[in-house]
Length: 380
Ligand code: GN1
Ligand code: MG
Image (tube, rainbow, N blue to C red; front, top):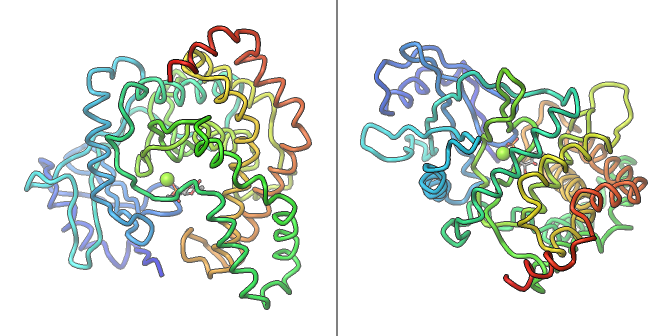
C-alpha cells in the first residue's frame, strides 16, 4: 500500500531532506502543495525564494532515477529553445551534485524551482484560455519532435496500455463477485462490457505502424499547465511521465481534462458534459503549432483517442476502487468509484457528440490536403 505523508508528522524530516539540496539559504516554511493524486508535493520557502519539494511515489514509478535522467535529456534538448514560449521547472541538484536523493526509508526526493508569476486554473474561463492550452501542448510536441524518443527511458511502463487495464479490471471483477452487489459497480462494469473493442484502438494503430512513438508529456491535464498574468499558457509542470508515447494520448487527455468543466470529482450539480466549443478552441491552438507535423493517420485516430482517454481513466479509477484505493489518493472510500462514473459519463457524452467532434477535427486539420499529408506519411 502506498505510504502517504502528513506534513505535521514529518515536518522536521522534510526540513532535513530539503537541507540536502544545493540551495543557498536554510529551508523555511514547508507546506503541502497542489492536488496531485500520486506523489507527495510540498512548497518550500528559503531565503525569499520558493521551491517545490517532491517525493516520487515509489509504488507507482518503478525507477524514479529514470524520471530524473529523462528530465535531464529533455532539459538539455530544450535549453536552446526556451525563447520559444515554453518553460519547464528547473531542477536543483543535491549538495553532492545528484539530481535526486533517497531518504532513510528509500523514498526518492527531488527539488525544483517554483515557476514564478504563473498560476494554474481551476477551470477554463473562455475560448482564449482554451486556445492557449492547445498551443502550449502543441509547442511541447513541436519542440520535442527533433528529440529521438529512444533517448528517453520508460518512466512508467504500460502507462497507456488500455487493453492491459481492461484485462486487469475484468479479471478482478470475476474474482471479487461480492463487490458486484454494489449497483454503482455493476453499472460501471456494464458500461465497460459494451466497449471492449475501444480499449485496443490506439494500441493496434501503433502496432501496425499507423502511429509512431514520439516524446510525450503523459499528464497534460489542466492542473499541470501554468498561465502568466497576460493569460498566456507558458509552462508545463509534472514531468514524471515524460516518456516515449503517442501524442494522441496527450492531446486527448488534455481535452478530457479541460472540456469537462465539472472537473474529475464533479462536486457541483451540473451534468458531466464534454464542451465542444472548448474542444474546438484547444484544437485550434494545437493545430497552430502541430498541423504540419501530423500524418493522415494521426488525424484519423483523434476522435477515437478522445473517446478512449476518459474510458481508460475510468477503468483505472474503477480498478483502484475494487483493489482498495491503493494507487490514486482518495479522501474517502467510494471516491474512485464515483470518479470512474464521471469519466464514463464523459465517454457517453463524447459518443453522443461524435459527428460534431469529427467535424471539428476535420475543420482544423482538414481532409483537403491529401498531397501534403501523403508526403508526410511517406517520409516516415
Ligand atoms: C494522476 O498524480 P497526478 O494527479 O499528477 C495520474 C494521471 C491521471 C491523473 C488524473 C502517474 O496524475 O495518469 O490522468 O492522475 N498519473 C499517474 O487526475 O498515474
Ligand atoms: Mg501527474
